[in-house]
Length: 432
Ligand code: HSE
View 1 (cartoon, rainbow, N blue to C red):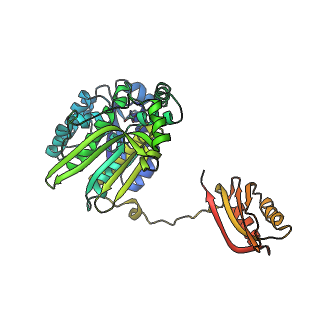
View 2 (view 1 turned 90 degrees about the vertical axis):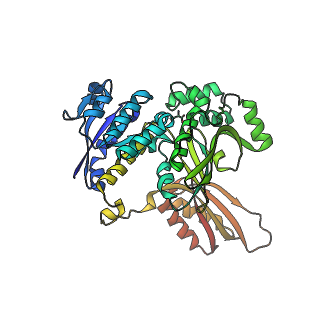
View 3 (view 1 turned 45 degrees about the vertical axis):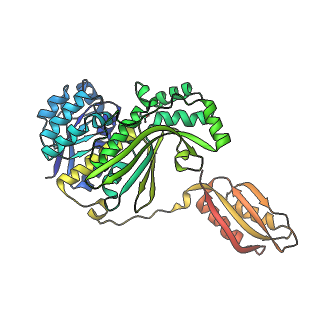
């Protein structure tokens, strides 16, 4: 089978980006898969107009009704990006009932219809993947599904909602919740109705998906405590930071107990104060993160963008690829192609540098060091010399302005050859 046919339902921002990537990366995907992923159908209320705007070939069949496409399209793999609940549910059940592979990024569908959707996949012997439904571009569902197969997931503490994290972390910078929400809406990751975000319900739906993936069971929406960030004020944020050394985050937590075959779970979504040194406190703005606690591998942190067309389409396309490889068989990319790897030089990479030298306390010593940097085109941003106290050498710390690594290295070599500089020194790249 050298072609796998793909049909996409829903040409909103994520659907359009998925189609765009599918076409833009066609050659690359074909090479890695050993088969072509061919877009054969799209469904959207404005299918004709969207298809034209995307420049799709006339051979790509346009459906106005996604259910029509689910019943009739000659596709091996269907992608559901419709949004909402009832139509996506009927679409998914139809596709899975036909035994076809389904990729969806619809957390609401999965949270509310988990038993029906997974049941239909089981009955139809159909493949199902939903990486984009939780934490957008972070490839954590595949990790939870596969990477801990030899381990046990004990629990998850996660920031799963970008809007509330944006409001809380911008609040720490002094912005009001109303202004921060406006920014989040402008940036496009707050839901149309932000009450789902603010009340914790969006994070709760994602928690249901995570619990289902880890246990196979249904953590029913409404069956566990969910609280939002509405009561958190600027006063709470500043008191927590200044007096308690803590930051407020909307944390969604799962603790898995029970035995194999009889899983049990404790679940909650709640505004939580975390110490400023805690990894979740470092998650700011629209970023999401999942701290996964496991029995053998210990704690692992997954971090990235949880929403937006690019991150979500990346997850959707990864699902398409993985299911396609599952249908077709094949090797991981690293084993599939034997290639000569071209090594490029990092000498043009630009950053600031820190350089600590041990310099003999002699007239002109610093001038020669400064000359070496200047001749290489590296500019000094700061220089510090410890007071000399009868020692023959003195530590000198230099911080440069951003410079090419190659230039800095040239200067460093010349500095190390100076008679007034001792061999022991320390050079570090500085990240912005
Ligand atoms: N509204 C969600 C968020 C994005 O703010 O994280 C989609 O899941």
